[in-house]
Image (tube, rainbow, N blue to C red; front, side):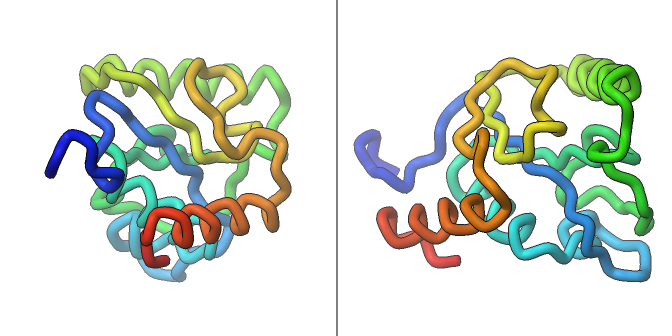
Length: 145
C-alpha cells in the first residue's frame, strides 16, 4: 500500500469495539457469536483500517475476534461504577499480558471506554448515530459495509 493511500492501515494503532447484546445461541469465534449490526460494521471497519482489533466484552474483558467464546448475558451498562472500574483494571492487565502497545481508538459506547485514554470518535452518539457514522465512513472512503 502506498503511504498516501487512504485505505492504508494505521500503523501502531489499536482499535477496540464493544461486544453486542445480540448473540448466537451456540459457542464459536467471537466474530461469529456477536450478531449486532453495530458490532458487525465496527469489526469490518476496524479490521480494514487498524493494525489490530480487539473486542471489549463485559464477561471476558479483552478478546480477539477469533477467540472461542460462549454466549452470555452480561453488560457494563448494568454494572456499578466500582464494578466497571474493576473490569477496566482487568482489561488493562490483559493488555499488559499480551504486550499490546500503540495508540488506542475506541469504537464503543461510553461505558466500555470511560476508564481508558485514546481517541473516541463515537463519543456521545446514540446507537442510531453510531450506525450512521459507520455508513458515512463507508460512503466517503469507498469502504463497503
